[in-house]
Image 1: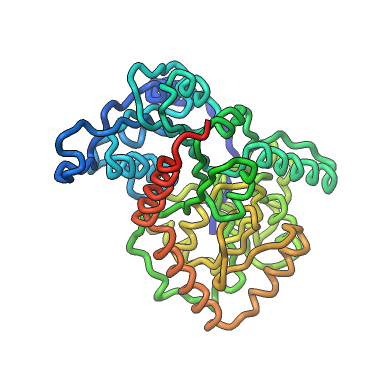
Image 2: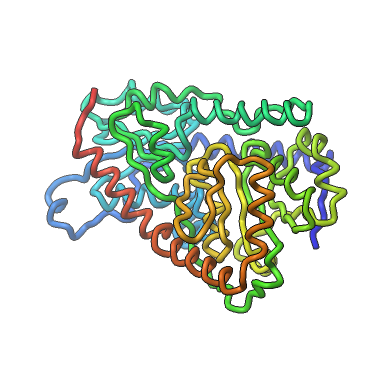
Length: 405
């Protein structure tokens, strides 16, 4: 169904890559001042005084286009970048926005609130803020030291199983300890499992990720035909996300695995046989959502599988869930599977293989029911509207708690 193209950068592509890099650097240095698109102007609480001021360090690029031209297909990270400023506006803040890796920005005004992300500029910005400013750390992943520890475990395991040393693929190189220690509160994506990785810090609030809705419905899906079809749909990090484990499991069965992830050259070399020589393993090219090919893939599989080792909450998985794919996930995906999905206990090849064989033998009614429950879960708990409510509540709780330093 799909063909794999080995990732080679041609001499023709190199000038385009350099141009993209220059444009990216320029955007990273951009500052959006006084973002007030959603500031309440009729609220009497703000009628006779200037709004509070917030500084947000996250992503700038998604707010540069006019509102009607902004990305409303992919929530992570585009939606998050749009909805945090909206939450701040609705809480009465005008917002200055910089990129999370802008290390040249020095605050030159008094802010009531600072929300920072990552270990690039939180310390520099924080040290130049008024002592009264509330500082919040926004994390899209688990505690950074735990994140790095479990990825190293996965790489060590590959070396033990295969005798191959692969380079880190999602390691966090920028120290986030200052941000975690000095923030007045932490907001992290994920469930309680994600929140508990920050247990040593006093105020940590977890919020669910979200997906933008579209017109897709699985009404005409042939669940019986798709019972042996599984999708691995993830962002970067082949070993981090567990592609090695899934490939090793599916080479022991005739069940079909569809892989939609960028394959790094070192990983491709290590797993070339699995990726190219097994008729039941299919590499899917990039698919834009929404599109006919994207919807076709959603209708090809009954399940999405991800034995990832560390996340905040993967948007790609929630996207698949929104389209009715039943999730088979590690605990570290930080998504509560409740009564609609399956949570892996040890992320072993044997466990994955056992569950794949077990669920492929369920009744059509079982698939229909779990798929319907999965869609309902996403609509209720992973909508942009719910993300906005959760973010406003989290910010409000930390601000109300005041300074911890």
